Image 1 (cartoon, rainbow, N blue to C red):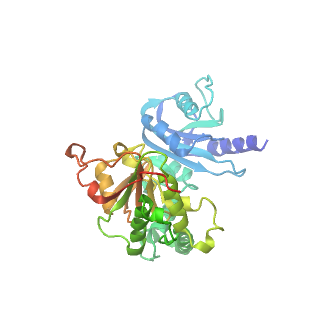
Image 2: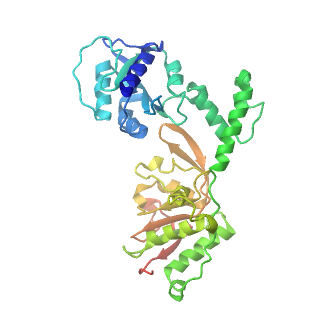
Length: 373
């Protein structure tokens, strides 16, 4: 009963929204979609709808019963009918297709409400009023909600300035903006990563003469002496079942928290400190990096063909990279932190045909030749 009320409430809200139309007879390129009972992520929805659109935004909004729903804005490449959009949405959310006639569409079917958009800018502000991380393309951030732009402003500006353009644009809200800025910055301070420690445990003679000790020496040099331009990152390779990944995880877990706190921390706490690139799409491999959350980069099962070589060499050198982010504006990043590559294969050779010249000069190569417990 509660879910039914939720759907009715959402439908009613959209009926009253003057930014939308419900007529399904005419073809259009501007569509508003609300999806209840979601079973896929915003990112998946965005990926599947991108091919149909020149502009697209997917946002998530909580509801009174704690069941989130998606708001989708679509400016399609071709003019379509509402029933055609509903068919596409049903496919994306893996819902059954339902035959429907042209006419008024002011109710949800299968938890999917599709309408056409009368006022694009107002609708974009409406659907981003609760989501500070919508995924979008072809849309100016300034067209999104005051809430979205305020949180983004408060996150990226460490100091509050009364002469800041965002504050000057909303003089009637300067006290609210000051309060939001304080809250966001305080939250950011609590989310800062733990300071890494060197590994100082006494090792057996076998370990002292092994590949593991080479890794420990590299690690301690990074932690004690810090970053310098083109400082070597670690490339650990060797056959399977030599304990490469297990040892690296054990090393990180030991060195990411103060000893007195290790037993009190959540088992996954150290995992949250690790940045793992997502190379399934080369141009977006580095989009998830956040300097306030990550202090180690780990690339397991490394395959050079999955990365843009030019970007990778910049990252290895600690240089500034403009990281593309799907559905969001790009951002400047610098990974001046320990970076570990793990592979069953040796690092690629210098090869002008693959632009790999200079790669080996940026890494410390360690071969894991046998399992040491």
